Image (cartoon, rainbow, N blue to C red; front, top):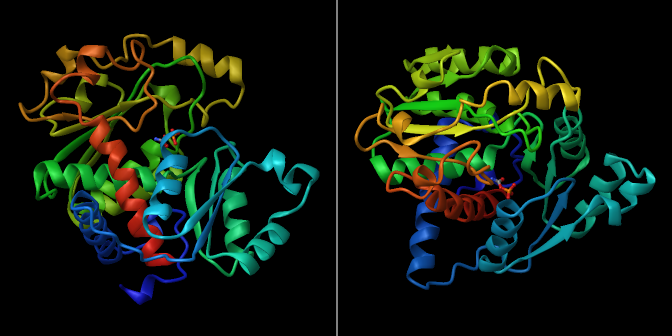
Length: 324
Ligand code: CP
């Protein structure tokens, strides 16, 4: 086990070097193999992870909780409305107290303009690792799982073209964290990224600028376009998913109105046909079937969405084992 990572926080992949991320991917692959072989890996015996969810979850909660169980430890699900957070207890006190009991704190807090700030505050005062389960800016564990999935499908990732495309899903306003984390990390592993969105769906300017810097540093390409099809053209991997127009407006109804303005931004087989023959379709899930993607694509032979969801388990087990 790489002891240099023990005690480290994980709020964005940007804070970890490519070597450190590769250490994590190597352990994730080993843990995945061990699980398939039925070999116990009790790397976190008697350790406890506190999981605070300000927002709903299916994959994140179950993969973290199952993961720590498989490593011999225990995960505690915490909902802020059942904690003294609901009576105003601050991040400093919550962080200090949980640090006296257990071994890691994981938080999902996606409220725009609040989530990342809360995670940073808990991390500052906690003496145990703070692991992001998604905030308003980053969803780093999702992107770890995405990368592991791509590596499993293609082997070498350098030079692959990945399309990240906005899709129209007006059932609710989703955070910016998935596309932002994708454009930050994938260029660091040599992938060429095309980001496609209608003009109102731009991402945070500082994140787009950092993604450009990451691409320049690794010699890969990062392009932004307002044309849906460009994300698919000659791509190896495509990740079409919705997010809110939060850089332009934080008003909910106005946001939904803007999402409804672009119903043709939906992944269909004709778009999949624009990519390489082996192109894979990815989505972090939950997907709005019919609005973001047609069933023939998400249930079709190019879709790897369940492999991607499974890999959340393996990368997070590696993350917990290395940091806790
Ligand atoms: N992809 C993802 O984070 O799923 P959940 O919202 O279900 O946790």
